[in-house]
Length: 136
Image 1 (cartoon, rainbow, N blue to C red):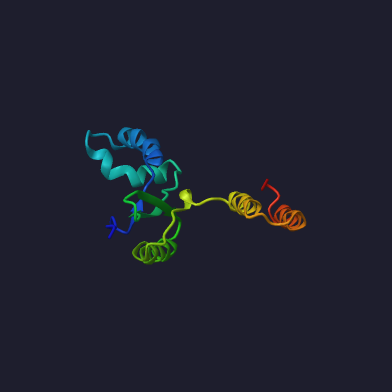
Image 2: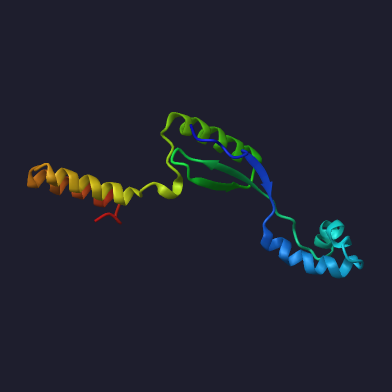
């Protein structure tokens, strides 16, 4: 059974903090006081503090994955969905799943190898091309 890393936590992008920290140090005055003044510095410098909600989990193969969301409720819902799917053993991470075009190509290859009639294959290809132009 895969273990899940702490479900959902608030994340503040480090890029934004890199913008604030040097300016906060200048505004704070004393060495070490800059940490207390990050939020105030962000306000003075018109930098909007940004947060994201992160779902951090380990899939059935032991691979760690991270997904980010703007809203906590979206992150909680996705975390619940992932938890159920991982426990069932049916979870496929978004970056590991194939595209519709690839699935269509694989299916057409399969039916060709099965020896379907030429007219049937032509019709299948026509359907695939209408629904998924980037396939084949």
